Length: 160
Image 1: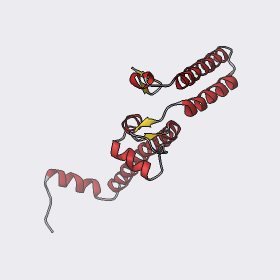
Image 2 (image 1 turned 30 degrees about the vertical axis):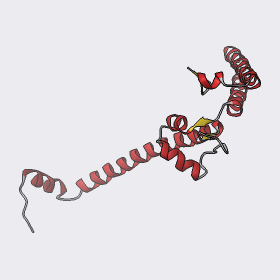
Image 3 (image 1 turned 180 degrees about the vertical axis):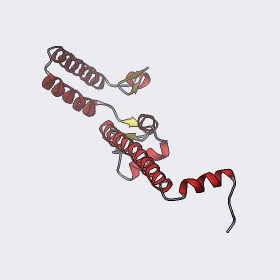
Image 4 (image 1 turned 30 degrees about the horizontal axis):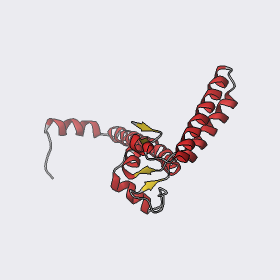
């Protein structure tokens, strides 16, 4: 069982204070979701946006740090990539933890940036493909190009 990024055995080893803090975070988060839901029912988009931003801040603040394997799974990359990104400062590691842990907010920030980059990369590939297709079309419009292509496909070529 996983509770807010924490496996059951981690929850079992929490101090009473840590447990109370975790419960308080869930209660606050549940209250925020309820207020957002009510505001949505009333059509008050501004309140919904405010409540969701508050919930996002609360999760970033209260969520436990993630292990390298958890970060890798969350970001859809390998463990060595996560370690490399920690070394480069792209992810904020918690000092002196074993196993190594990364701050949740840092993971979420990088996840948002990666999502945007992946969309851009997809668009970039699509754009490049369109450019190649346009270039191919322009080449075929040149005098004799279409006939030359037909000859090549038919095997009617002459070695130079």
